[in-house]
Length: 324
Image 1 (cartoon, rainbow, N blue to C red):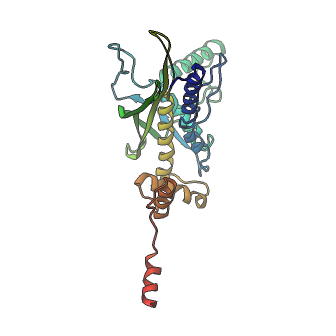
Image 2: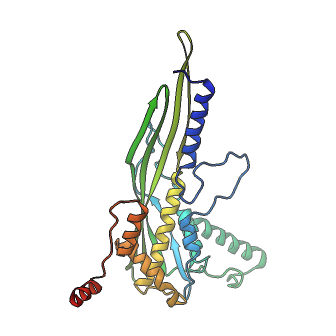
Image 3: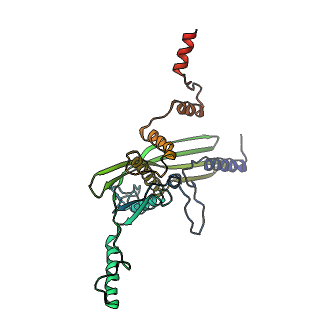
């Protein structure tokens, strides 16, 4: 049986397009649009969670001296040793941005501490200029007020980067036409703790993780176009979730959890605590792994199981037996 060459390429295109459409979404586009123009990245789902947080009773002054890579891992390479780190070294900037996103800049007043020497040097220059040109021996506090101090210090860092936590793939071929898919998953973990500046006590701590998925799809076909002349064609696409985006989401989730953990420990409060009970209940269920039985039943039904569980009300079932 012989297949026209056009049907072979049509089948390959269909497989490739189907694979592209089935790629999972994780808060950003799976396949980046090819453009020569700079653009603003789309918001992640964790960033939307931070924006939707209700406002606090009062802002918390907070300082971040650094949020470093504590994994010590280098980026894996198939061609030899590389000096590139496995994760970005700019996690401190992501943490500051996440703190400002909490409640649309209503939760935290972030003070600059990562480059404190630069800030103090500029203030010293201002003082010297005012002494020389204005003759001030004591700097006017209205012109150069004292630095704002922080009541809470944030510590922590990137504590884990595990590669190939899940790997797999599948493929099939028939009469010279085949398709394949490969999947790989990494995991990045961050740790964040809040420390009281006044007493040094660790007030709260949180650990979050985010998976980093990579997926490859491909199709191939071959056909004898003449005696001893074989035509082969291949097509494929690879989707790699950016490590930076995954780390950003893990940090944003840590800040979100830190806010709710602090509310639960009565370190700070929402302005309207009545509207926060649902948020706290959902946070506790996710943190402790506690799920309602009805949620499990809905998940089983969505999965299409033939043996979906049935929830039985024990009290009602007992009353039926007594009545009979």
